[in-house]
Length: 288
Image 1 (cartoon, rainbow, N blue to C red):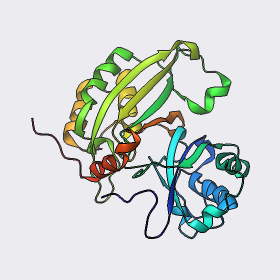
Image 2: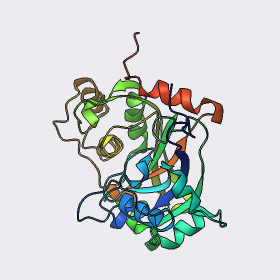
Image 3: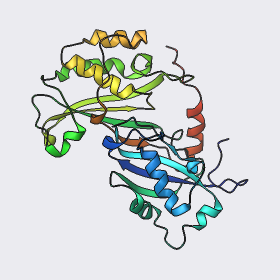
Image 4: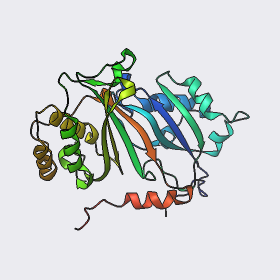
């Protein structure tokens, strides 16, 4: 059984935090000595209300983001002790109070008691990312320039969509991931949508929705699709990379600045614990 929210033994209470950030000036989400990170800033702001915590409040998130990657909607959870909970006092607007202690490039949308069994990472049913690219047919608003990858030639969206179809489904994405010891690279990619946003200067938006993503997986896939769109790679090259599981070759990882985590999906409150349990099971390729 997954641990419940209000733990009967040690009295911790779990909270869910929904927030977003501009990743431009951060060295990623996770804390790193001597570097500015989203986690470090968030924990510091939370400590203003609840006091310093040696375990950083056991903060966990739906999906880590690398340096320069943004989050329109990120989700985290943390556990508070009864002593920490008393510090809420008479002002229950925790989100508002945390925001006053945060830098302007991070904002908390909500900070509420989590449903029983909730785990920000393992209860999630999907993540959705958006990557924005501008080719020669686009007009990039100066206010968007920090969030868009610019390429000189016109991209062939038809070919890019053909390559995207190859990747949708349950696969071992080892050829598109930076390997981590003991971690599986099997993932289910539910969809890839590619379209020009006519209201945003015809910027090309590539949206990927999947159960979860390995390290560098989104930017590696986008890099392959952009290479196909530029005529530097073929649909067959993408198929070969997927089958081989090797990262060797000409397909490159694109820059971080065009990428944003835009949505994390969860089941009904009553199914949070069960979903977390199921997700922890190692992913295996389905038999044909």
